[in-house]
Each structure stands twice: as structure tokens, then as C-alpha cells.
Length: 292
Image 1 (tube, helix red, strand yellow):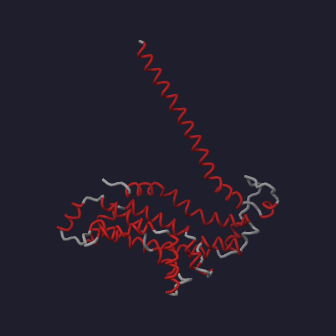
Image 2 (cartoon, helix red, strand yellow):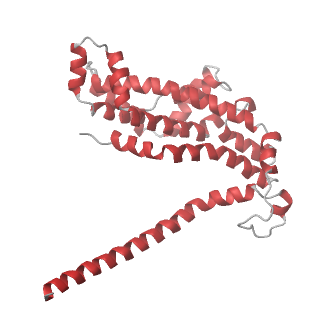
Image 3 (cartoon, helix red, strand yellow):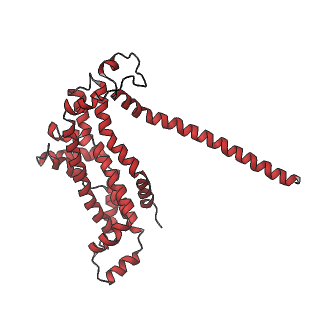
């Protein structure tokens, strides 16, 4: 083996060593960051499994449970109307998501495929709405819903959330990636726009549509400001503002473990939903944001 071969072998070995060291530092950093991010969830679950007396006897909260109990989860459903909050949130989430999908699919299709006078101007105006601070929109919506007498109703909760400029834009970009030749061929065959949308565009864009649905479900489930503002009747509380009600008038201020149990019950569905569909979310966002 000549000097050049030995030199090349040494360089390859050094490169592999640098790669291993780099990967070690990377995984250590990611592991530490994961611990920082997941620690609040771990502490929440651990606290929810502690008895009321055991928790209060701890001068410094322990990071483990000596005698785990599920009494707090029973209390979360028996001492406060948590099940009612779940039902309200489910109704709000399903109806809002369904109406929004109906609106944004038709709007995205119109902007992506139909030709009408002023289309670009209208779409530019739509995009400009994203520049308006959300606080101003909430104030306007609150005045409108109040004047219509829709406070403390599901209609008042749902109406302001049945459309989204961002989701229209995301879906429009995805629709535009579908070759226009398919649309022209369908029109030659006498296919209507609605049939073409249902049979061609929606199936091809399914990853993006699924992503939007999941993100909207998460958004509805976590909605706090608007439900808190528009409802003061406990019969219409969602889980988000219901948790605040539990803390203020339920057992939250005194019984922290039971409060944590209620938070765990509310958080688990979204965590499971995201873990199951995380790949579809990433795929849909990447497809919606990439043209060509």
C-alpha cells in the first residue's frame, strides 16, 4: 500500500470518526431537548396519579409516585361536568370542521380552476385579511354575534370559524399542482365542475385535505378566547374554558391532582391524534407549500 492509499484510508477513518462524534452530539442535544419538552407532560401525569393528601404532604414535588391512584380521574368526571364539556367540544369541532371544509374546498377550487372577472383581485383581498390582527376580528365578531342574539348558542360559537384564508390558500396551491390538462379533458367529456372536483381533485389532494382536517380539529379543541368571550352559560362551555371554570369554581384551586387529571383527560385525545397522523400532516403541508 503506497502513501496515497494510506492517506486516503486515514482521511476516510477520520471522516467517519467526525461523523460519529457529530451524531453523538446531535442525539444528545435532541434527547435533552425532548426531555425539556416532555417534562411538563410527565409531571402532569405523575401529579394526576397522586392522592390529595400525598400531594399536600410533599414540601418539594416528587418526580415519582409511591402509591398511584385513579381517584382523581373519577373525581374529574363526577365532581365537575367534564363529560358535558367533552360533548359540547365534540359537537363544536365536528360541525365547525365540516362546514369549514365545505367552504374552503369550493373556494380553493374556484380560485385554482375557474376563470371569472376580478379573480386575482379578490384573492389578493383574501390574502390581505391575514394581515389583520386577530384581536380586531374577535371584536368585530363579538359585536356581530351579540347584535344577532347568538350568544350562548352553538351557532354563535361556530359561525366565526367556518372559513380560513390560510387553509383556502394552502388548498388552492395544492389544487394548482394538478395538471390543467386533466381539467380540459374532463370538460371535453362533458364532466361538470362539481363532478370533476369530487372525482379528481379531492382524491388527488387527499393528504392535504386530511392535514387541514386534523389541524382544524386541533384548533377547535384548543379554542379558548372565542368560547370564553361568547359564552357565560356553563351548558355551552368547551373543554378549554371548562378547565378554567373547574379551576375557579370546581376543585382546581385546592385539589391540584384532580385538576391535573382533568387536564390529562382533555390532552390525551389530541396527543394521540397527532401521533397517529403526524406523517400525513407533514406530507400535506409539504405538498401544499411546494409547486411543480
